[in-house]
Length: 427
Image (cartoon, rainbow, N blue to C red; front, side, top):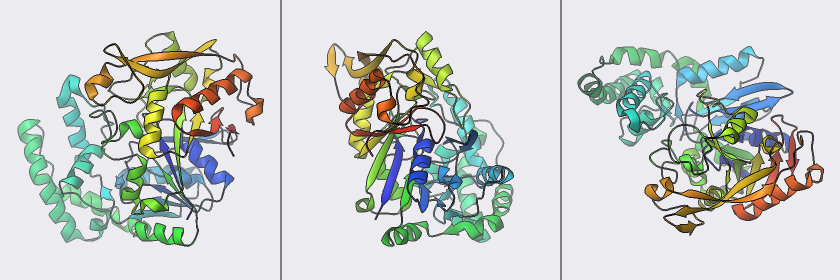
């Protein structure tokens, strides 16, 4: 039962699409599955010099022969789904084999409206959401007033659910935010317009995936967002609204935990995050600007500039622990090729005390000061390296040091954006 999980080990944007794509091209992958999040995610994949970005779709949509699955834990904007599909079709990408869970929840237009006005209302206390309705859709799911994909095929049930959801939402919009009420008929009409095109894709994805595993097929579960954005285990409240850790895969796909064989944490050779929230190794100097520039640190989905900092081994160890990682995939090592010395955060100092594990409280993490160790740089272009032995000695030392302090072996290293620009450390 070859089930592989690929997830982010920092605050997202680590290059999960590259790791997923590499797995899918080195070994036959039968299914690639998204299990959480919505179109606030972003994966960039470079194939033969051509760049592709996926948001709601699994990045495996670009892998010939693999079935892509949007599982029950995802919140789905039909408008965003078809816009993304049409964009790939216009570029000649075959996207016929896509399955969508009947139990996945729908992001309606009013979810995005609520998201944006709420974020503006928070002022300086903003969370830093994408404004695409992901949080409100998950809130409706938990409040049991959500709309599922299956509801789009029964107009009576759909209308009842939209009416119930907007009963409260419209009071909030008109009486608190001084906005116009949203009409039930308009929402129902819009969602029904997607039903005919969507219906052939919809199935019981939990049954589909379990049958695939029973048959010995390989299923790749692709994480969105990342560990430090997990609603339970991340830097709450500056997090996403789902569980992008390994445990969330089981709930989000309807498979049991005993079915998972490998859990790969994707992690950058430095650290970035988008949006608000604490970030101990964040840089506000020329090094930070250089990381942004060389790394092309612009959010795939948001277009926002990413905050940049040095590698944080405390975060890496935490991600290894809460996910039960079997290995790491280290990306963007090539970006560090112009530094003479490279700092790595090995611990924090909090109120005069050295702390080597993730602080328990938000206050402690907010006040954490990084404790650095320094490694000699390699001052060379490594983008053409294709084996670990080809890397400069100092680059090898850096990778080995990160492996020793991060809690799991490093399976592979990205040395450039291209599919082929990868070094396997532990085959």
